[in-house]
Image 1 (cartoon, rainbow, N blue to C red):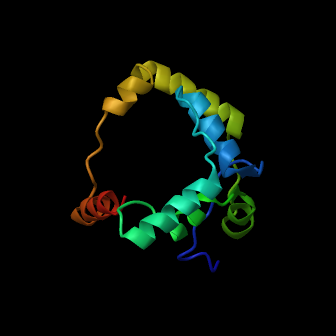
Image 2 (image 1 turned 90 degrees about the horizontal axis):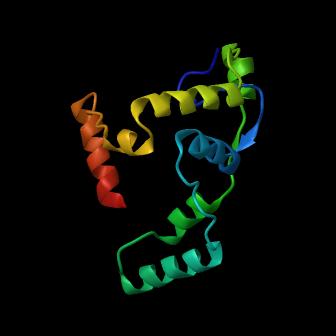
Length: 131
């Protein structure tokens, strides 16, 4: 199928921006969605950090995090033959019910998930060091 090595957004046929998806996800799990920051100030602060050698996000990271992304399941449908069984709203409702069964967002935050491999643990360590 030529799909090897590619990533796919796998969900119902409704195309959503990252902001829309994350808003639905946050509502389902009962947490406040991320606040839209002021990109210009974040970019300027990153430039200053680069000039002074201070720790923190660099301009490329701010640009990457600040761009809009579209989650579109069309590629998964056409290249993988994926057909959703549940729509996004029904899936989020099921997630909300599950979160409530677990004791809410605070209970989820207390859960720990062990890495599945040493390589995954090393990846988490590198990611933690880079932020």
